[in-house]
Image 1 (cartoon, rainbow, N blue to C red):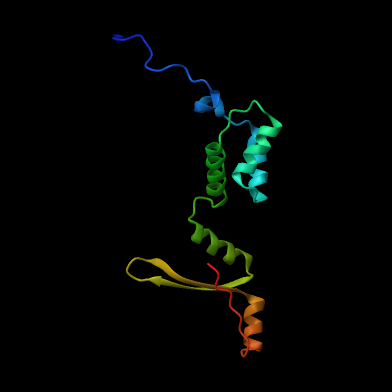
Image 2 (tube, rainbow, N blue to C red):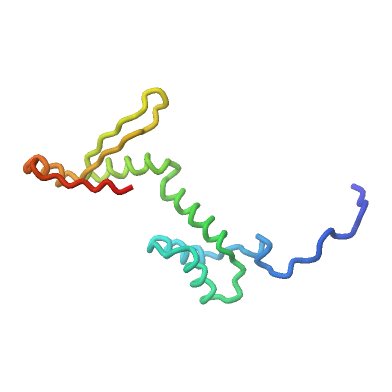
Amino acid sequence: MEVKNGKHNHPALSNPSQHPCHRKLIDKEKSLIKSLTRSYVPPKNILLNLLQQNPDIAVVSQDIQNKRKRLQKERLSGKGPVEALLDMMEDSRYYGYCIKKDPGLNHMIKLFFAHFKGIKLAQAFPEVLLINCTY
């Protein structure tokens, strides 16, 4: 190998958080991100919490977002969100559901699900029906 120009093409980084190798999370920080994520704490508050515990930490918000994405992927066990939802409902045995798929694309186009107690109530009192169609 022949070096043609031994000079570096930019000055050294002034902030260690600008370089990913300095932003490695230790196990304690990973577990804190995991527990705060499970408690629905927003990423910016997780970052503030990490900085309060260790002001010298070189983590940025994107590192927290990446960790949260890895946790989500781990929680879904490699399945898509809808597939994981259907598996959860199947395993819980508390929900009944009905799916309509597009036959050509094999994509789900409609999903209706309800708690079995709600289904029994609707069968017992068909005159009154309240549906929450929030999306």
